Image (cartoon, rainbow over all chains, first blue to last red; front, side, top):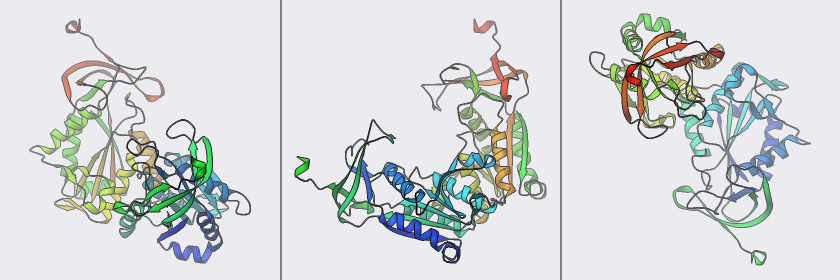
Length: 227
Length: 227
């Protein structure tokens, strides 16, 4: 996928000074990742291709937590902060990565707990938390309703940062796709909504065109095999 | 009802120095308020008396927003901060009151937006926001599942405050009831769950006894009229 990012609280300098390697690993995983799509089960657009948060999450986890990158995944949050969640997504050397494709209020939760871990110098992996990378999808993707997208996260963090509500260095990352002909990982999940059980997964071809209100349209390119 | 409160970020001095009158009004409304109860519709405890958030909210609104106290109610949040909600509950002279009986993650939302309004010097009524009062119910009440309670809010704000995550003066208030014989406002709502439409409302007598795990048991005292 393609990425864009915005830095808050000097995150750019923190990356350049201390975390060039860790950022390069994150960047590589995200930019080498194919777009992941699934069929919507929302009334009105049922069957249409939409962003697949489960598949994307799994791909990032697989790539980030295995050699040669070997980030720690699902690191437990200390008991005294358990009201902020059970674990962080990924950590390495004081960098925390949170992948956030859920409903948009979760961004505030991620931000508050990032701020707390930064101030409390919480160690998730090797060093106290010094940098948080939050990964989101772009608003261009058709997605499940009310799920967070990059431009929205950017607005919220900008408003909070302008007034100094948080001090932790955060790099906010958005996942984008080029328009045109795109090869994507298509996953069919067994059973219904919210399922994480993969029924089948394959590479398929799609045509992506810019749509109304900044949201793109994704159509599968049918081949002889589909008939 | 009875109240307990805990101050964060010097809220006690802010009250004493500037907001003795506003606090006295809040305190009067809360301590003069009868306990509000309704029947649970949760499987397993259906029909049992539980804390009534809708009735409590309405009582506070009625008492706080009318003369002689005349607080402003439902004051819109500025458009640039609309991702944090549509309005604050009550405001007067730079004091913001938020009544929070909803699911516990809303406390973080209340805290973040309070911090933002404080730092941005947002004016909801007459003066920039200088003090936030968050009203919760005590953990002693049987309640809808996952709803915020005072002791839980206290733990969360304490953890955040210990690490300086927020700077806005907050007075966290808990609503309690004495045990024993208590007269309470009993409301039956028309239709099902989440309804705010009052079917009938009356004063009834209850016996409240301490129960397991800090949660009390509330039994209606039946009178000749009930047979």
